[in-house]
Image (cartoon, rainbow, N blue to C red; front, side, top):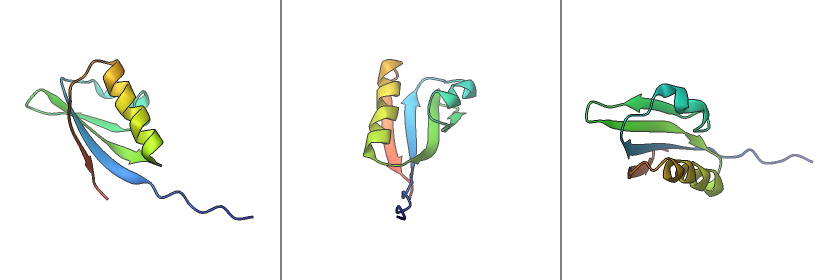
Length: 73
């Protein structure tokens, strides 16, 4: 029985503060980029809304103010 491929969606999230790129593993392999305005941009793909909510929970658990969530696909 063949299973349908999971359609990944790429997101860009911005948070206040500077996160070291070493946090990338904790954020499910998202790429972390510190910006000149003391924010961090996270870019990567999630399989579904549950994965996205898990990522948002990690941001919440670190106490980082969420600035934006933007789907890129």
